[in-house]
Image (tube, rainbow, N blue to C red):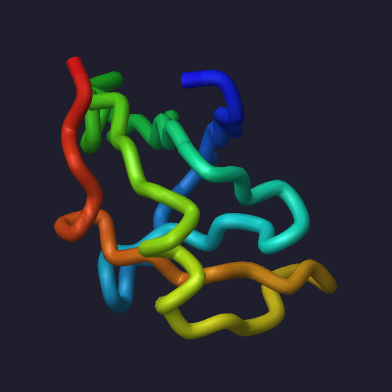
Length: 81
């Protein structure tokens, strides 16, 4: 994938089980890793996820820490191993 962005998310948005991906960084192909770990050290979302830029552009946007983001539900992303 030539035009690919890599995102590492520290913690998902728990209330709707989604992640916020900065609009300015989204590319044609987007890989997302959720680095959050439980107190036990277990990674809650241990997979690498894929979402196309086309799909993201259809998602709602909002402000997160002063950055415009697309809100992408984790369950709607494709798992990549």
